[in-house]
Length: 72
Image 1 (cartoon, one colour):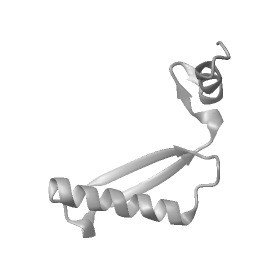
Image 2 (cartoon, rainbow, N blue to C red):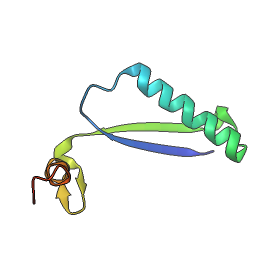
Image 3 (cartoon, rainbow, N blue to C red):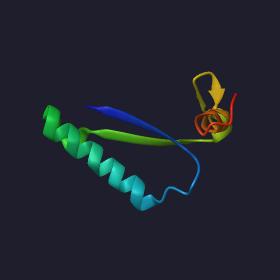
């Protein structure tokens, strides 16, 4: 029984339709590539607040600012 955990930042208002598409797409991919049974594939989507997300040793907002050329 495959278990997939998708983590996304909680911003921009991800819709129920978008989440359903992710669930369907991941399930279909596992069935096609690995031959996994779609009826026993579990997909969980966690939305994480930005203040709980870090990249490269920085909070995500600071990382994004750095990537835009705003320095550290």
